[in-house]
Length: 90
Image (cartoon, rainbow, N blue to C red; front, side, top):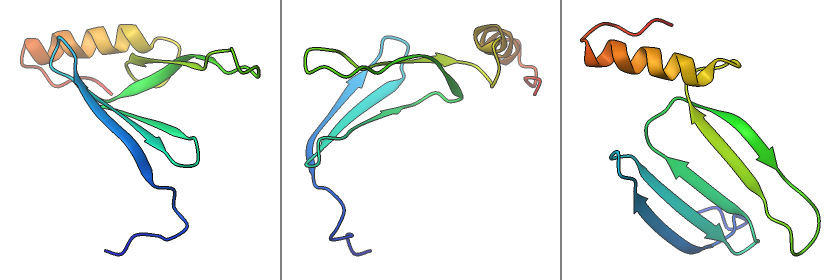
């Protein structure tokens, strides 16, 4: 498959293994964008902080779970079901 000539080049790629076995990959691109890839879906965005100054930080927090405000409880319930050999509820 040919690469899109208009797509930015990857300038950095680094993987990280988390203590529970999940893997995170961070990619940086020539246009200044950053991409995060994380195993162990599903996740929901539970916090974002995006601000404007050059000394500010961009923070994105992903929580395990399904859609909705009860994301962590859903993840915990499904994790227990998986341990007990049951089919997680949807």
